[in-house]
Each structure stands twice: as C-alpha cells, then as structure tokens.
Image 1 (cartoon, rainbow, N blue to C red):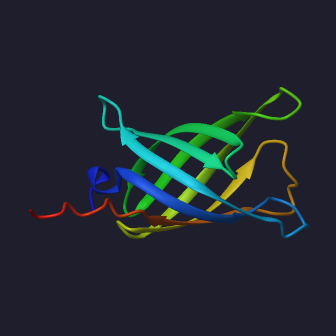
Image 2: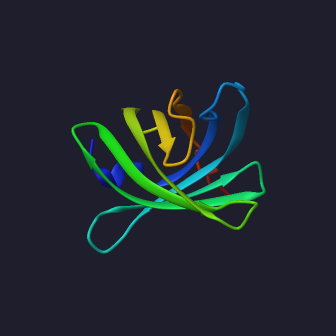
Length: 119
C-alpha cells in the first residue's frame, strides 16, 4: 500500500473517549499536500468539523487533529489507523483533555465513487 491509495472519502463509525459508550457516525475525507502528507477532514454527525495532518508508514496512518468545541475552545488529539485494506481503516484515538482511562475508536469504510453510465 502507498499513501496515494488512501485518498478519498470514507464513512466512519466511532465511539467516544469516555465511559458512556456513545457512538457517532460521519465522514472522513483524505487528500495529500505537496509533500505527500495526509490532509484529513472529518465531519461528525453533520455538526462538527475536525481537521488534521498526518503520515503513513508500514500499514499505519497517524493523524494529529484539532477542532473547535461547543465552548469555543480548541481540542487536539491523535488518531492511529491500522490500514486493513485501502478501503478499510481500523483506528483508535485520544484527545489531550479526554478521559485518560479510555481510548476512542473509529472504523472507516471507503465510499466508492458512482460508476459512470454508459450511453
């Protein structure tokens, strides 16, 4: 696998970094910058946007992320994805101010682009 193989959009299902077992859904969009680093944008439950940058090595994708919370504070963390295939990422994450007794989890499934109709 190469870093270029992961460019695209994924549906995500995750759980938060706490004891609540609260789950969430959303999308993850991955692109590359001019230095072949990953640029990530998450859209969680259609109401929260998170952004990050990262790198890929030996089947592992690591992304540092941040977002503005409801209280207008900036939250930062890191997510680590094991790249099962280029269409399936299995990860865990932690935020700086999250509950240190827990890790969040996230599974990402590539959204396949629609096939062109032949006329």
